[in-house]
Image (tube, rainbow, N blue to C red; front, side):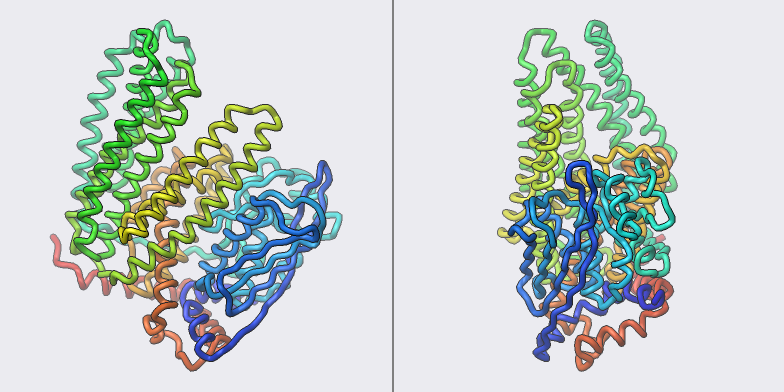
Length: 638
């Protein structure tokens, strides 16, 4: 059983990508069904709900979610849709070729995302042919994230009690561990961080600990050194301006003075870190220099807002004007970058260009968000929109660095076909559309909870975020329709990393080092799984490897940002893998050399299970082989 599950982890990422077209060619159809036990809370009482999960092939991508009273609430519906897409992505299957039916065997109102992680595991088991019996030993709770994390949920204590009363163990998010007590801590309680750990803890797979590291091209490192120098110089100038305006804080109150001092202290700390890593890890140095610049700018914008208020000017007018100017500058640069995007189809160029577009989308996002806050804050709270203005401005300058890096590495790495780039944009667009619907439903759900306890300010802030999320995904859809595929990929990835992962992980405000390390370990495993799968096609990303290295350096001092950066790397890897799945479905001959088309669906599973029984060892050898092949295609460097 353990070998079976360990093999499935790689099977799902490589071999089953051909399952649907092979089955279609032979006229196969099937239905697979299981049940999963999900704990829920009604009032102050926990219950265990039996949920039927049915996967059918062929299909059209339809997801149907019902209970005994009819349709469930939107937050549950969209969370199940996300769970389906995550499971099928890790199964290496195109969700458009299957249908999913989920039925909660209860009556009444079903709301919230806490059943989605259990449903994701059930779909993954059905899609890959895993033994589903281990699922039935547990009640499973957790909100699935787009990368496959298990996000924190509410009412854990009641859910643990309900599971114990039914003689079940409970699988719950590791993010809930600090608040777990009583029945949540017995020998059958299993905290998990995400899909890879759950495969080990629930299905008995071997722990997945492979590391994938790809050195960055020399030209990329040279650009990052220059970017670091520019940011350090501009940060020094900004901090001098703050120092010369410090007298403004004397009558502003201790709270605002404390916030400005925090910005300055963090900026000086990150400048020191940038200098420390400049020689050994240029991308990490550039990232530290970027955050140093953001905090210096935030202090400046806060003081500028204070000066406007003290002189009798309109604080809201000032903030809105600054946000509008930054939005216009980001839009103009986005239009210019679009003209350059089709210069090359090398993977390195494509990723760097997509990142530049993502940074510009960041600027659009943050300037819009700052504008939405303008009328909601007084001068004491001006540091909040000031910080988002700083992010918007710094992202524009950061995008210039990414465009420089793209230009410097225009011929580096393997070449992508235009069809794969287009397939990636389309696939990640569909993924982002579902994810953003999920986020919007969650925001509305959280807003209701906040309003019920009188927390109007946080409710309004979340509502503003939802408006910006809609902008991002609509913008990505517009770029996709215009054939601006790299720009669309960047904007969609930005929507996923800057919105959903904040909701699922960073909103938890985890203070536990053990929790942070658990999520970081899970993200490292997810990254390795995806990178090993992409290695089959020679798609090894030095950029994502740089993200992971930087996150490792950042983890001891700033685990929340480290986790966010890891999420960025995982989302980028997932995006290209989604494109590979869609591209492989359209042209199955791309991977027909791996699995014999005559094997059929079930034969493919059996052959792949046997071939991949070595697990991580094979993945490592595949990655190394592909990386060496990629190196041989590069020009010589000194």
